[in-house]
Image 1 (cartoon, rainbow, N blue to C red):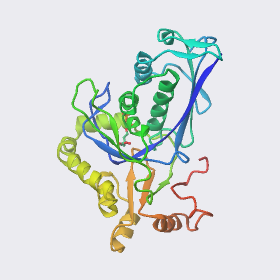
Image 2 (cartoon, rainbow, N blue to C red):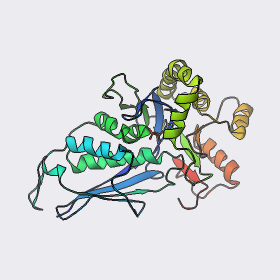
Image 3 (tube, helix red, strand yellow):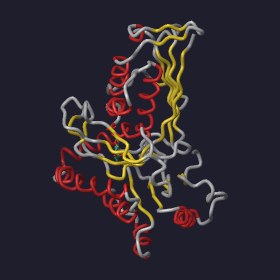
Image 4 (spheres, rainbow, N blue to C red):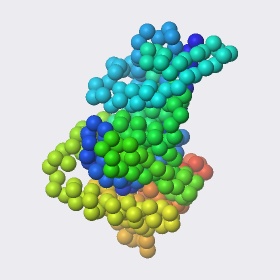
Length: 330
Ligand code: DP6
């Protein structure tokens, strides 16, 4: 027999960023962060995990290519270990499947993961990937933990992954405990709360980013004089204001805060927002060069696409929750 589980997890885009760790091995951040989870139809990871007594070793495929298993760095193994420690019995009489908690220690896994967007190009592929892995393994191994507890496990694979277990607007609470047990993600509002928003992602490069978030953050924490000030003074205030903006669907405040928290400026968005009575578009960048733009409604999104593409794509008005432009391979 083979027992398998397939799950699909969207990526998330931070509007108040996680940048910097207080514990590198447990992945504990120096500040809270808030993100928007994208529509799974557009940017997501699909992972199938399977187990069978006939598997003679653990194997993993990423986008169809066989990968060395286990990965170096220990993050993946840590997630697997945490999930295994919480595994329960699984029984399916019809199929003749009976796995006890103890069996999970010796059974081998086959894991196949596929991203429908560029991997490691700054589009939070690790977020979708690790969240999906943890979620699918938890289902396979009949783990009874709730999403908050699973988010603390996904966090140990990649910080931003803890936020991808929920849809809508999500906050990663940095927590205070040394063991990271209170560093979990919570949902602030579900995907229906503010469904006017349209997220447009301009993929200007699908090449792997030169600096990984992990090493970029490490360097910042080690060398930046401002990072402590950001974590202690700036972000806590922004988090409160952002939560308020999301609750009230207050786009001007949302746009102001998201743009302020992002580390780059797009001249055209700034110019456009200045030419209107109030802001129409917010933008934000993660660690790669790709821009994520959030339009306040469908009309503005259509105008934005017109400006970016010089023509309006067919049927965009009927299918415009999130829109990825610029990369034909997607
Ligand atoms: C800029 O979660 O990829 O996207 O925890 O080291 O795996 P590790 O880093 P990662 O960093 C994401 C950084 C960011 C901001 C954010 O998503 O909050």
